[in-house]
Length: 219
Image: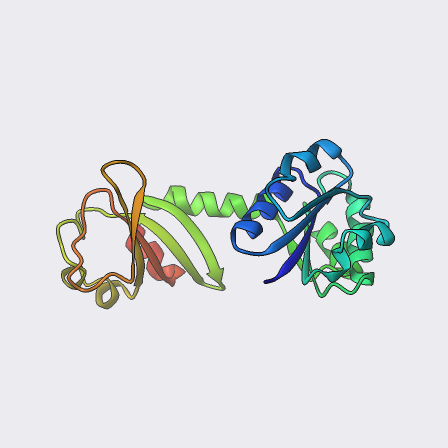
């Protein structure tokens, strides 16, 4: 099990902390605002009111034993810089921080951040790709030039089997799974469907491939 510390429990920090917990990690969440701490106390392993620029305070909750840290402090950039530096001093190898500008990103990297996120920019690009494509539910980059797309089945595949749709040969895309609505609510997921799997109205296909091929297919 991997151990993470999330500093800053606003909307972004809470989402990261809860997402990591759901993925099976042990998460320590810290914030100076007790109300934010209380909001996640029952949903992650440890939630504590801690001054993140105080290394001794971080050690008291075990933050120095974490495999990685996410610094999700909102508007106080000075506190974010100091927190990254303190986490680096504690020996945490992987430190993810968020920035609003290239200058902020450069400063965070200089003090020890191993990865810098431009959250608003990344969300904006992801949304733009989703809106520009036909019937795309979501678009998730997984590597340079490669993504996963959640695509709602259209007339090109409806009523056909996977073999008949010929997605791999015709489009160069791999079908990872199909999400199908259940009559009583919820979804049934078929992972790596067999060649005889037949597509129906409402199916969402999880496709992986090169961005150029995904763009050509979803357009």
